[in-house]
Length: 352
Image 1 (cartoon, rainbow, N blue to C red):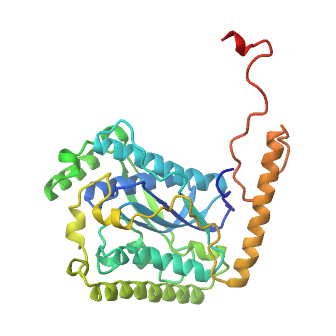
Image 2: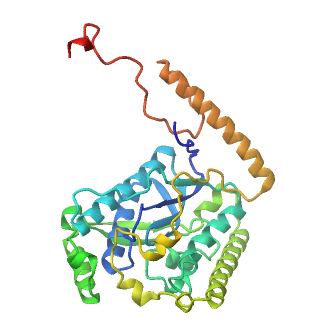
């Protein structure tokens, strides 16, 4: 019970983010796009969550999802992390790798429409705000932007778009030459080999408007209004990034990296100089309530305090050996504590 307990309900929309300890492993190359999409499609194949929006950056991901239930939700991001760790180990030829920040998965419930709009707009504006590209259309990394543009604007709550993604098993992932530095042609050939070796594929499905149902947004007119507000907010954030570059004193800060450079970027497990300059400790700072409505947020914070207190009471009962206690709705059960000495009664430590 060292970290704040997560509050996960069936059918609720969540903003999920998790990041690596250091480096930029999720580059925008062809081979990495194929691996990323294949892993997410593989994990999603049994409907653990409904993915609404997704943007993969170099060292973290933003996802807006609808949870099937608390176990399925945690299984989803836990399995994605595990599969990606194994894939990066193979790519870099490592036998051991601690890829993810410890205890740093943020699972924030979206309790109001305004918070969801802000979270989605922020995710799609992230590449521009990181000065990688001018706009999300230029970003070569993995995202749900094309699916959102294709089916998310028509006003239907059940709109979806699926893409068949090759599932590349771990033994078929090759070690990258020259420490991750590969040419455009080598990237293309590696991607083709991964495609040929894939023995099965899975559908990666995006449902851009599925989150609205959990917040009682159901009419086509209202769905269109919400999506228009997302576009307006998202374009505003991209415009802020352009103004920041225009006003930068240093000349090297006034341009974006560009799609071509991103597609040739080396997979690295160490921080760049820019990352080192901006390094901040985020491991223990996680948002548990994502709500911009002041009154609703105040109510939810009080409810969450009661939820934490109830989780603590239940855990104390567990430590006393009472496993019949009923945990509050939305709680994830921690590992059961030891309630007895594992040594036999006749065991004498003095004899060791």
